[in-house]
Image (cartoon, rainbow, N blue to C red; front, side, top):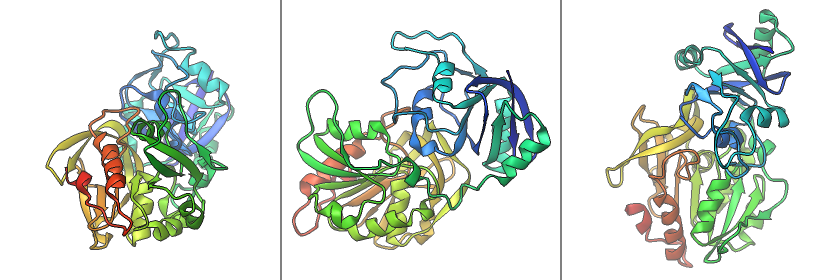
Length: 374
């Protein structure tokens, strides 16, 4: 079936449909990972976005029920150069195309993804429409232009859990620390990483009141990843501001941005963002370089970070702020994804640092912060 991808700048690509038929709109972005399309599809941070994979051959190892980061695909649409209709993997249970069709995700293949990626790099991420129903170029471009901008959108409210729940999985249960995790669009592998380190994790909705959270008597608080504009999640910023200094806090991605905003810093929308599993980040505390997984279109302005905070990580591609910590309180965060899925495991130590921080935290609200000095 014929399909078209129309960008808000007037560029139109003609290709073939795979997955569900119909029409979808969102912000078109690109991901440079060679593998991990299933984790990308199910990452709630991609809510509202049409994801383009720069690797040309997608779908060859199919879909399995284990490698998911949420209960369903979260992307608005999916763009690939060539979709592999035949898959081979002992864990696979269905094809990528069938998975998208079953979950009503519109996809397009056989377009020049190199050209599309270059446009996004040069012009910036923009709105787009994929359609198998409307094939009129002018109509599709008009729809893309009229679709709401990502700036100002609170999408954490869309993807968050509706009620609190306890994360559990088979195997040894976590019971060393009680962690409460704010769900702004949390990835399952983050919960796995915490559980592996002996954390009993209670996940609460994005708008859960700070006072009610403290009544749960957590040993630590986790601020999750998520989609949309961090400045629009005002209720989360207010809650986190009340929690700083109460107990150890660890934030990732949107959680990093919300922590920065709650401290008084500012965020901005990046031209085309960081999305991939191969971004070099320098740890300023020890001078090492980590190969890391990224998925963010907004970033923290380092010049607005209050003096009681210090920068700990920088992206070596463009010097974007990738991590900071409080100089005295047990509070730290990173912009990238140390839990990977997909991606390397260079940054696993951050989860160990969080558990060590909870272990060293005392009743007066002080911490040695020894984990972060490593």
